[in-house]
Image (cartoon, rainbow over all chains, first blue to last red; front, side):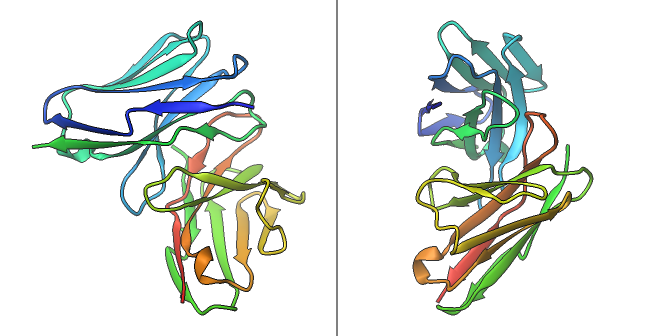
Length: 112
Length: 115
């Protein structure tokens, strides 16, 4: 089955700097890769996703890149703000009928 | 995005009692719902997958008689923790999707404390 590795587990950046979180996956059949943001005491919120036929996707300060050959994908947050502080989870899925497989999460702290 | 709600947001119950958690999709028909539990500072652990009108599929190690899941309609799934014990205390989160779409939308979670 699919296995998703996520790094780093914790990340601290200065406000205004960029943050990068990386994930690798094992199943070459996976073709959908979402990123979720979870604030303390809340459920995960889908912030961006990418499909295997696309190499990069951007939404304002957030971007995701995908390298299918290397089986890794990354989340990029530019101009970080204190409200970006949260736990971020990557995930992968092979088809619409199977559950998401999550990484272990990255705790991002943006220091003002 | 699609909206998923959960009720209650927090519940405290005594050991040995049962508690029911509701998960609703507010603006779409959820053909599939998932139930997760999450311990502090850990990732989400999938407990079961339920398709509307069918029996839930439980992950290995999850007791189906203890965690009863019902997905009777396209907008509602319930998780009942039966004979709860302190070790069942956790953050329970549901998610929902429709059809063969990939996107899953999560509820806000329910904090269960068993005393």
